[in-house]
Image 1 (cartoon, rainbow, N blue to C red):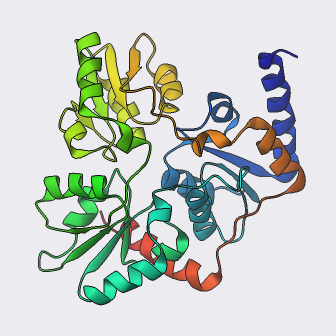
Image 2 (cartoon, one colour; image 1 turned 90 degrees about the horizontal axis):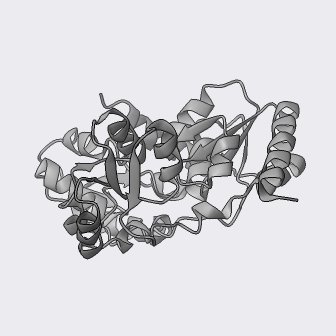
Image 3 (tube, helix red, strand yellow; image 1 turned 90 degrees about the vertical axis):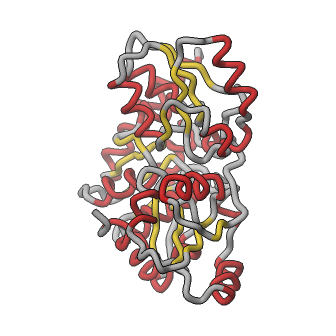
Length: 307
């Protein structure tokens, strides 16, 4: 069977199962193109969970990584949360544990802990307020000036936020393996090859890479910018899965990855076969213990309250 025929067959079978289960399928923009195409909602991790929580679906199939499915479980405790690839994790999220954070909090007892959403539910439960890459600057600006800040776990995003807010922060020694691969030399080489292209960079990249950007934002922010800007060419400094949405939403424009290494193996671990199987056997299910869920939810709600 041809690949296209196989994709079409699996897509039809998934759509049928989805109706039978009253399920909704979420896909992060870093997922494989065929997985994005079968999804009902495509976007950033927290945005996906919030939209899914507002639906009347009984089942959420989260095509992403583990902490994203946990966020869905936190916001939708009455729904079944399926993660098609149970071992799809996030190395950056794993760089901070609840126990390690408790030790740091003892060292800085007066500090406000700001948690990037790329953290486990157990870690969020130890934090004061969450942030996304899109609203991290606004969240830090909302914290009283006399308060110390511990920012976890991404030091690159933390340095970007510090540069925009002027706030000194204690930064956790964490990073995104995929975004941290991008080097200034690679961006400059891409600029030489495509001199008319604007440079779009995710703030999880290193500061010296961010400094070369024409625009810095979250994944959905980068897509919006490319869609609305008049430029016809763009160099992209974020995970390769975004190219599918960029080409769909920006017809007539060209996009070039800053480096071919911008591929997250965890994001690519989800396949249509695994989505289908998850709906068939209703596994793997992701749950969050009630005590942890309540504390993590409070952390997320404080973020959502910031206008």
